[in-house]
Amino acid sequence: MNVMIAGAGPTGLTLAIDLARRGIGVRLIDKATEFFDGSRGDGLQPRTLEVFEDLGVLDEVLRQSIAIPLMKIYLDGELVGERRMADPVEPTPDIPYPNARMLGQSRTEKILRDKLAEYGVTVELDTAIVGFSQTEDSVTAELSTGETVEADYLVGADGGRSFVRKHLGIAFEGTTDESIRTLLGDVAADGLDHEHGYWFATKANPMAGIALTPLSGGDHFQFGAPLDSADADTSIEALQELVDRYAGPGAAKLRNLTWSTVWRPNVRLAERFRVGRVFIAGDAAHVHPPTGGQGLNTGVQDAYNLGWKLADGREEVLATYETERRTNALRVLGISEDLMQKHVDGDESAMERGENTRQLDVSYRDPSDTSPIAAGDRAPDAPLVDASGNKVRLFELFRGPHETLLRFSPTSPSTHPHTVDISRDASPEAFAHYHAADGDEILIRSDGYIA
Image (tube, rainbow, N blue to C red; front, side, top):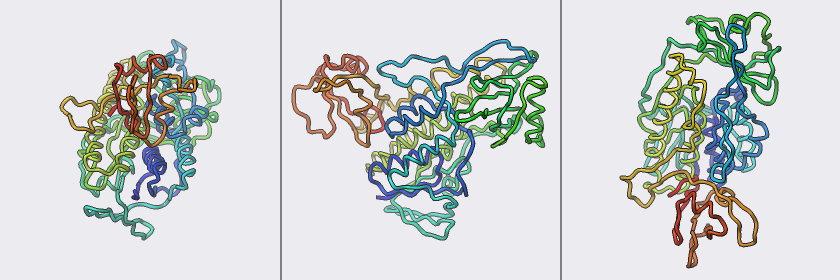
């Protein structure tokens, strides 16, 4: 089997790693001539950290990232308070990574590319899909390099303007609000403590201001600044004027603007996530406002959900990708849109990310689905003691491209190739987290969901 993936952002990279570790041939192409170098999606949610643990990149992600910083709130140049987007939470046996981490998207992508290279796969830059057709058995893709490629499946992870989605004729339903425009980017700021984030605004309108959030690995901040008109200046000089206006002259001296973009509220969801042997994922399938930090994370989970299903190849399994992920994308879009509206309305709670942004509560449970492949909730972690007396975690036993059969106080041998037998003495937490009784058996899919 072989899979062609268009788009080498976090979604495409995650899918490529998941397929490559299963021994499936994969080509990952991107129309860009060089790798993206900017922060963009810089928040990694707890569920994404769990995915990254399974893929073998979590240690490097934790090493390079930072915790959500404390934000200093200034109104008319006066420090009026401090707050975090989310208060830190202590790890528990079932949730080992309860707190989001901050890591610029380009750094996350570099970590994923390095892991992918361990499987002998590299990103092919300056290579775009310019056309494709499919039969019941394969997809034939035409590349901008003049090459024609035949693959078993094609996945479009090629962003909000996805060629793959458009070529399939899939509607991208939603809205773009041109009345709100924000300049986003990365800049160094002398005079500000890089250990903290900053919100500068006025007392008359405290929710309209400029934000600077520290980025790991240097002295840069990610900034978000309002633009007043369609022809607003996006230069560093114009950005300096905005900082002077909201923070006061001399509060911060900006330099080294390395990346910037104009953002407009964009909320869209593809009508379908699949046509035959062609799938879409990430921003190609759903575009989120940055409020709540959901976009990149939802794309990573799309890829993690799709990888094992492509490897399985059965139609009844492939059909669950759209059912599970589109339903979740619709829910997550609602969360992001609600937070964005609170910000527009001047609701200070918009500056805080709630429990439902961690993506730990994503569930594929459908009471009406009684099929053998029906899925449920996220499988929690738990500590246990193995037969040799060593302390291990369920997540360590789940790790890898395989499903796992959990058996609670079993009385007979198992024929499943990846079985974990658990006694109450070995892990009372596992019995509690899984609401298990003696003799229960629970199958855990390779994407960490209860089957």
